[in-house]
Image 1 (cartoon, helix red, strand yellow):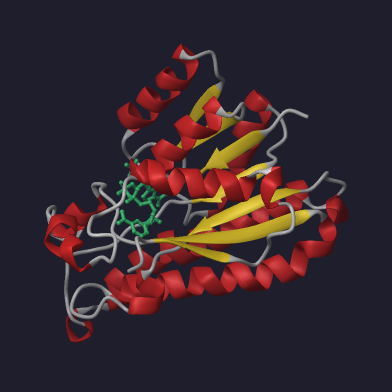
Image 2 (cartoon, protein in one colour):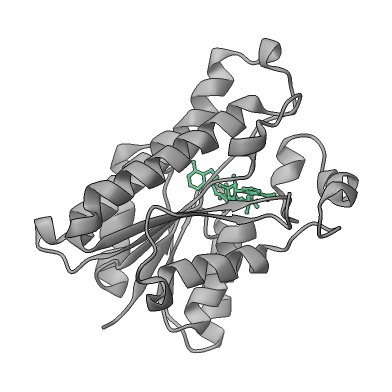
Length: 248
Ligand code: NAP
């Protein structure tokens, strides 16, 4: 069976590493991005260079019409989507809860929570045996922040990831009998550009000494965990949240 994975936020960081590794493993890859078309096209080119197939699609995961178009475009170009990696995520400048306004909450929750729900729903409508599909796998990219709370940095972001964890557990049980497994990964401190959004590009280096393994992680290390959860090797794993955090 042709395996087609749609990766939201597949253009940079953890999503891009997952896209490249998925292609290496034989998946066709739908690379969703929001603003940075060049980054998305670069991932597609890398995949095509090694003989794989990929498509970049611009879509804001927080917008229902974008999500439907995203799934339809990937399906038309690459075939029925058999896997979803709900990876797109944002955070905003480090702040205390008493400094966070409704505008910021709306933006963070739109991408991290509404986006994850909309994409999961769109995937279920295409994969579930209830809708005539053949099943599939969804991996939600959460964060250790869901457990640690990110005090003084972004409790809003941490809370959005706790919602993603609850989505994972609830949806896994909802669709387990319909051929769909749903799992989550909770990365710790990973070297990507997301920390610059918080106003501290060097955050991983500052906090690395407190990680039991003594360092930050790479996007590729998270990608390996995601690819395992997507694979048949994880056929009896659903509703599981896998920490990829060096012990933090
Ligand atoms: P990143 O390097 O900042 O990349 C974020 C990706 O998400 C980009 O491809 C971006 O596309 C896309 N994106 C952002 N908003 C979007 C939207 N509304 N619709 C569609 N795509 C959107 O981030 P990252 O560090 O790889 O993070 C990936 C995931 O891992 C996130 O969910 C994050 O919360 C989680 N995570 C990261 C860490 C870490 O330490 N890095 C730790 C725990 C969890 P554009 O460039 O086009 O905007």
